Length: 219
Image (cartoon, rainbow, N blue to C red; front, side):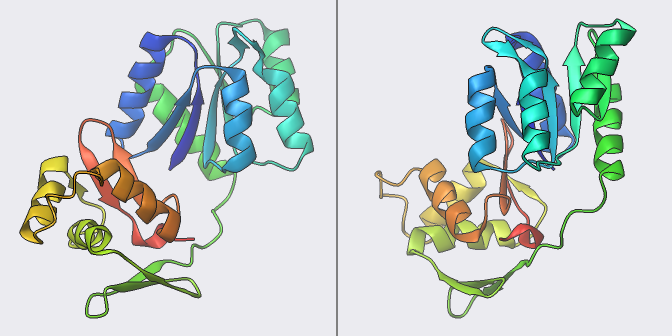
């Protein structure tokens, strides 16, 4: 699940990000409302985790605008506002649930997954089908080609979809293909290019752990 986390508290944001990633979710963590607004203009998340009081504004009016514009991502408000009237205001602005700080991280996971289930199933993904002989992929109705470095990384990740491969394992695949000398192509750049070709959700980054390929997420 792709989660947008809006939280300006560094310690809390880091803890939430690490906990979500440890449970297999991908997190886009931003610390300012303006960053969240910019990200939402270009992307879609599976769920939103929103601190309401930010240094550059209140997230509730932004959430209300997103709802008015037709955005329906399930939203969980993270806030120190515990009064009933404030929780009602958040729900009326478009929040699906409220979690008052301080909270337990496992409860956060449970509530997040609950609001995601209540929002209904996601639209079916077209999926990714690899052709190892041709070193190409079929993404929905599109045929996609790859450079040698892109294919070496993708082929290693695709050996066991869903498994997390460490940076060392992927760099080993590049070395095995005789491609480790290309200093201008860092692993992050290669993964970024693959995401552009396959869809943003095709390759997940798990901070401190590595990368995971999801062939059902191509778009």
